[in-house]
Length: 337
Image (cartoon, rainbow, N blue to C red; front, side, top):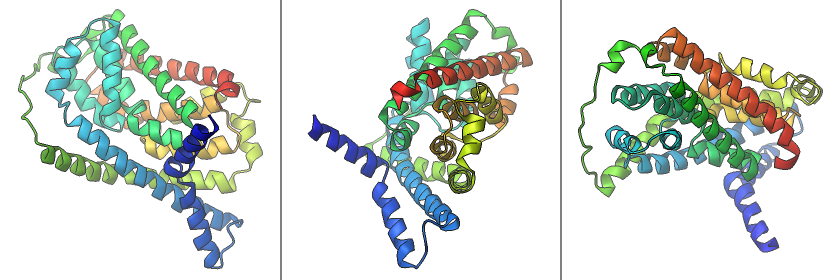
């Protein structure tokens, strides 16, 4: 058991967490005559390390995920989802969201396509909730920072929230609150052409480069904020506002996260810094869920597809669900961490 634990610790710390990279950057700064205990230099080390680590992991993950995604074009995905019924369909849609685009705005066109194809509304909303909140990339990145337990629990909670939210919307029969042009658009049932392995590799490479270009600004901003929190914000401030002494920390973090816009990869560095400063686990993860799922630009895009009543219901379900998950994480923090 000790041998297996040593292998896992090496994989998590050195392969995923890239601790060797942090030490290398620190040694390089030291050789340049810079004191890494200085706040400014420490911020530079944090920034360079996290940007390189997240970018390298993302390039690898996006390439692999895009290669897998090449087997599931929209038309094929619609047919797969159409085979399931009831809560099984919601679960399948939530799982499908784990191998689709990396932010809420890029998920909405697929949501519209699935709804136009005649898939049940609750099923398409399960997809819409899970796609930005949970994906294979976030699982690996969360493991690299928070460890396997927290990563698995976060992903599981996100999938459960997506299934429950979609099922609730389905039971309320909200189809009349979808814009009519979507319901009457229909779908052209065209089989995706067969791709060779080379075609899939080219597709994966193009998706990787395209996605990195889109998310890199958010990574830089997120890591910059994380570096500032990590080296400049006093720990007692974070602990007071978002620690166990504030029973409303989860609500505060969720409401702050809603109007922001970033994907999961730009949010993780901020969450890492807050957690290191004493913020409760549920507070940190609620903030991540709110930012990725309820970003203001995606809400504006979604309004073009659904009427205000359905939009308000979607926001309410996600917000209440995220807050409940946050308090549950806080209660279980001792067991998970």
